[in-house]
Image (cartoon, rainbow over all chains, first blue to last red; front, side, top):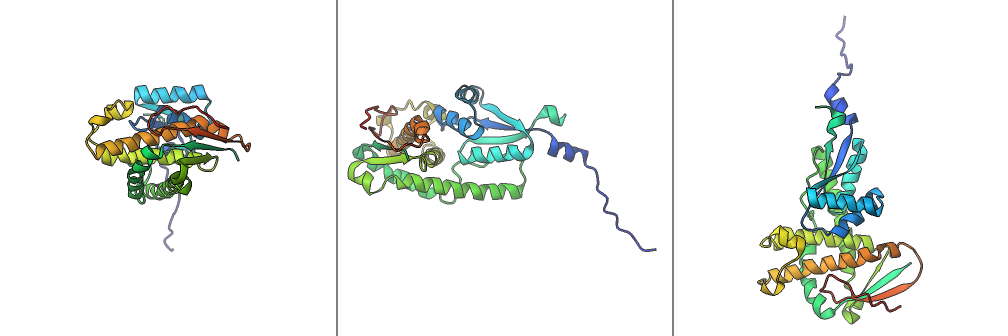
Length: 101
Length: 174
């Protein structure tokens, strides 16, 4: 009887959760970009209306960061890339509520 | 295509172009800001970086193209739907680079408020800071008109801009 190689998938619950949980796009404050520029970028990238864009801009300015979008990882990465094209400091991070602790 | 022309002070802006050009050259193979993505793997990070540098170079080329023969003849630079956003982004890139490399001696709080006594700055910091302010002025000016530029009619507007103050003169000459 020959040896069989089994290639059955191995479950990695943590990886599954990390891939399929929600991710946040966070914009971090910087001392260089002007306020109207932040507002412009938020409007262009996320399609926010002016008051929403201004709210996020103020949050960045006053609290140092603002969660501008939450959703699936792939789209979060695409948004973060676009924000980097606009030279804003942006990161993606797991949404704690959806990823558990 | 809607186009807005802005007349800049040649006397003020032309001397700053050396600074702008040197910073633009320094960014040819470098990102304006350090790449801090968060939880992204190494391959993705490399791809991401290369794509960003490519896009940054395209934007900076559009900014530098503003300062052509027409600019040196009469101080006029023109914006339309094709170059407005790239130029705004290029200004951001150059300002970030100026802060990282040339304006390290100025605290971030001062850069953020721009409350700096320019006359008291030593050279070449003064020149770098003037370039930094000029790029912000250009950004403000374009951002004010971006919605108009996207409307797509064929009107041309010409504004005078002193190239130094962050508040644009609103003297439109249609």
